[in-house]
Length: 334
Image (cartoon, rainbow, N blue to C red):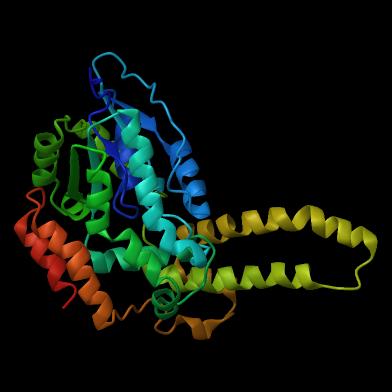
């Protein structure tokens, strides 16, 4: 006899589509019990990195809902990875396949939820995320060197196929509607997912307190990239210094890994908390030439055509997004 699904749905992302906001809602609302699937996502990433899509480990799902609450499970780690390892980006499709198989086999839910957004805006957000994680590629370099990231993460055609093989339903909802038209989004969420809208007080609280929840840096993105390059150069200079006495080599071996780990967060928090003028004062003009056109993202015709087929054509067949929003996604690729 088939087991009854424990969770209303499993939220798999997409990344950069309101994941943190939703996870905070489910965590704060007493009407929800949220299960973090981050560990399972990490295992899936490790398997994908090795190219192991068969002979997968069995995982159990033992989380139970608190009395009277709705159980949901979540991790966007199933839908992207390898930002700093471009040679592995093509294996994101393997990650989708592995994640679908592992989570589907638990019987935790029969519904896979994916949040989506305007594909052109998603690409801008993904580029910014690489900067937040310590990089300093321009938009043009991002499209050149991380094109596979865009194509694999936004391959909704593949996602629908592989998750559809393990779940009864693959649901797409729009993060744009959630952000800009909550009065239509939340009734749709309730109707499609069979889950209650989080309490208005919780939505208000999370919206007001979410000041560091991966918000866009906008015009400060280039400044953070410059700061990353500057601090990275400090580390590289220290790493490559030769003819050091033994005590300084020992010191470097002890402190450099800590510097490498902390510099990314220090730079990011500086960019998030300082205004542009103050941040420029920190930079002192370093790498100022990087600023011009840094965030420009010129999508070529081939990439636009790919996104029309793998995003827009897929969503056109879905009734869970407003028609005008689907039309705007296609128009953004003209």
